[in-house]
Length: 360
Picture (cartoon, rainbow, N blue to C red):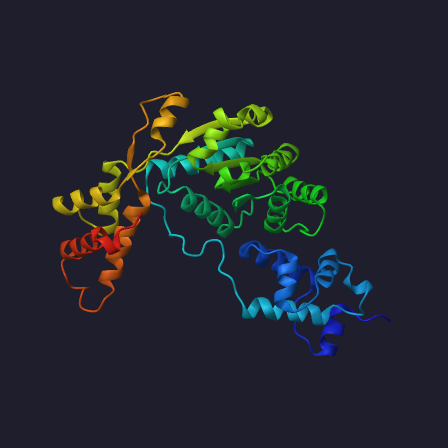
């Protein structure tokens, strides 16, 4: 009578989870680390072909047991942990107009399978909000929101492999097979939505990665939020737009992030500090946080202005966040905890505005 997997594991003196558990953990590990199966094989010390058989479920055809491979893989992941996608994310997002807009668009994309474009200059909080939204859904047990950052010159094949790893699909296959695996997983996930950051990178070269993403969205029927730099909008309008007619007909909404309003800055300061900022520190913080939108002129020329012309300057959420982080750092130094908040805040802004502390 054949022994069960548990009996063989006990007999071998090896404590390791079942195959399905190890595979899911490895797929999540690769997704967090931006790894491919052959990368993980090299790290663990196995041949690429061995890992290919393992993930395909055919390893036991060439070996009597996969116990030792599972133990090596499991041990490696335990000894080399990777931070989850919510690492270094704030517990709460800043209550800004842009934050609310991004979260609303994510919900619309998920609930109605819409394709939505969000564009804004660096410092408007796109990446933080997208990553936070995905992590928050996963923390609540709803694994339907998937964040992916498009890398420079990303190919369609690389995009498909990254999506497969995120979704727990087999990432070791040809391009067409990978896309099929991704589509199948997304169809199995009600109201799935893809959050694609730095989307302008999908348009490098001949936009092959962008077209691969369209194949996935069309066949899976999922929602998608595309966030990126102004170059993304430029390519969709007077750049490569004439080659992307199929895409343009699918985009439901386009939004521009405008940065913090001064009133929002006051609200955030009271929430974080429990009091209003002294007038001189407020002026200094506004000066420090003011950033230039270098594409405002082109945006005004190309896009319809629904409310008002796009401003050439904005208050950077990133810089404001640096200010409050600096206050927290100073207050954690022994002896500073009893100092007046205004004194600590003044020291924080003075440091940030010094040449060596300037943050872009």
